[in-house]
Image 1 (cartoon, one colour):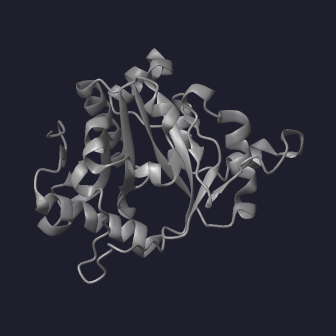
Image 2: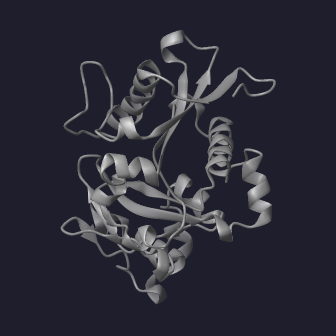
Length: 257
């Protein structure tokens, strides 16, 4: 969609060229900035990709002021249940047992590979992406969205405070509680509530995770150590039925926490 009074355009990828543009941005963020790797990363072409890409819808934010080959400045990929069946599984199932979600008889959508160009962080770019995400969910009747989100680093001890906070304050209800898989799953409740400095711990929670929590999001049981991406993942789960009307209106208009 063309964004009113703006040089930005927000739309779904429609061909292989669009997909490669999204993968180039992902390479800049996940590989060059964060040190990610993987069997399908193409260092020569500078593309971050995986086998699931053909099954996702890819939401792209473009800045038309930039050079034609470098206009994609934000991306999100989205997979609904029917796409997961075609792919053989949701991407997150490599890390989490999603049986509670899959057996909930709710309309599911997985989110992933969310990233914004370094020059656009902290500004309007994420606002536009959230607006597009909200419209897509409404169009497809999505009731529960979920996906893995990352904390930088693979040492659980170094992340004990924020992980413990997420466990103690934001654990998903049992009916939707995905479980981190062995052997890379680790417990998050490493620090007891009475010993945890919640204010300091909150500073270690990434902004994107905080945004989901503010609209009523939860986390699954346990974290998952993702050495290929040099990060520790948590499974974020948002039941749209518990999002307040205030937040519904805010995000439908494109607001972001």
